[in-house]
Length: 101
Image 1 (cartoon, one colour):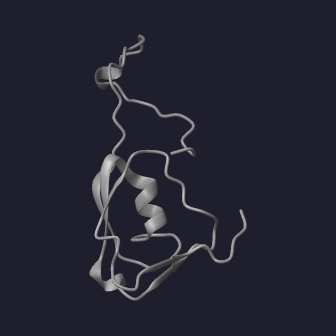
Image 2 (cartoon, rainbow, N blue to C red):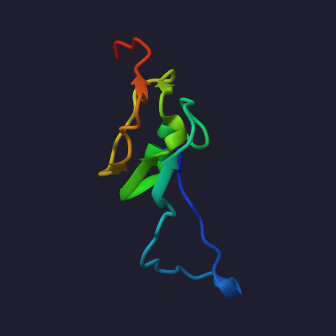
């Protein structure tokens, strides 16, 4: 969300006067499943943590049992409360890739 610099609205009827916006809701998922051992992109842990709603749940697919998620682009950022379910898949490893930061 840090890449968003602004947003606009189109008001029906071509109204040119100022319009009061009462609420803005950003779309996010409340339930996501990690399906990829890749560091980023669709199905990745990084993508799931970056897009899940506050209070949402991140699951880990059973197909990731025995695999390693290697963090090649830095640490993971958690900037909201997130639940995790089934993250202790047998043999699932999250590697910091020998990072010192």
